Amino acid sequence: MLLAELVDTADAVAVTRSRRAKVDTLAALLRRLEPDDLAPVLGLLLGSPRQGRIGVGWRSLAAATGEPAAEPTLTIADVDTTLDGLATMSGPGSAARRSAALAALLANATNGEQEFLRRSLLGDVRTGALEGVVTDAIAAAAERPIAAVRRAAMLSGDLGETARIALHGTAADLAATGLVVGRAVLPMLASTASTAADALAAVGEASVEYKLDGARIQVHRSGHDVRIFTRNLADITHRLPEIADIVRAMPVRDVVLDGETLALDENEAPRPFQETMARFGAEAARDLVLHPWFFDVLHLDGRDLIDEPLRTRMAELARIAPAHRIRGEVTADPEIAERVSREALAAGHEGVVVKAIDSTYAAGRRGSSWIKVKPVHTFDLVVLAVEQGSGRRAGMLSNIHLGALDPLGEFGEPGAFVMVGKTFKGLTDATLRWQTERFPTIETHRTAGTVWVEPVTVVETAIDGVQRSPRYPGGIALRFARVKAYRDDKRPADADTIQTLRGLLR
Image (cartoon, rainbow, N blue to C red; front, side, top):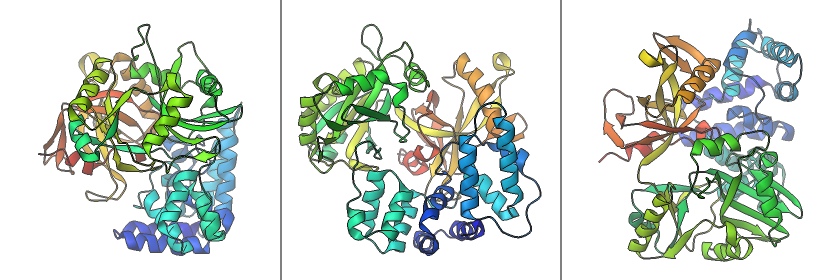
């Protein structure tokens, strides 16, 4: 298939706000694709190429872009082959080779194709075709039940492979796409509540568990082989040998565990999140040890547990990993839930997660069965721009502009980010130096005193609430925003939404 057909489809999807129309347009494209083109097309369409990171940013794209081709000749296979090459380039001279390969690709692209490729490689497609829409389009194209396709996508963590099976396999093949030990599963997510008592009232009898200020991990073991994944399904086994050794020592043959990891100080209290993330992101093991704390088990010795109630999964977890379970209590009493919350805070943790005791594991979904409770509102936002500092911060990039995701397109393009405030609170000298080095590398343009950047950097931000404001397009502004930490483990698509923030209005 020609790349131009994908570009035309993306343009058609972008101009309509109807979800049904988006699904129908995408389904028509998917029906025309060869099996080998499915994964590359979906990756480009979602702004997340199947190759992962390929070492291409805004500056390299700008430098490589020349006169466009007059007629479309590029195929999906041409683009995919080039991206394969870019992803594997390394060593001396790789930067020059990467630039040459990128320039050759763009030289064969028309003006519209160049623009599409730039947006796709920067994760800024903005068609409103998020994963949910694309998943529904796969179901429509294959004439399969939406629930079956969604479940296969969630459990496989691979939308391209799900599309291939749905479109070119049988209904039985799709139904058989389940949890595979060693293949990462999209993690279950939690909604929010202001108090533990409110959360308990919403779910009934629940496991009220400590919410650790750590990094999410999913650990798979098959025999002696252990693999560890981040919440974004990146394989980081090589970074965490101490956790792999702990799981190898468990009395199991095969297991899939969900949990968090964090560093502890000499009193076994949690170290600052930044220290955990510095160790978590290191490419080689370091002296600082990370401890695993598990709160769920999804598979155990040939038996999938995701459709079993939480009380069953907890019992199995207690049997195989008693020393590494997250602390908590099962209760239907709001006073007990509030006590556990106070104890978690006193121990230095973020708060609690209240989980319905009979709930199943809804992979990849933010449902109402898990509810997190924090004393301070904390949201994951995206940096849109950063201002030049003044006074003591002169010469540094300081005040950051914060945006919330707008998946519905209520305040602009679907999937874009809506500015909700600025802050320089919570920025240490080390963070200021990091910002000053980092943000010019993803700069898109400048205005007086402000560097505008690609919306790809997620920052965990604490706020006291929101207030109405005509200053910003979403109609709200953050109250007393302060930076907690930059989150390298999260994608822009994981950011909190403008709708969630607006829900804080009284």
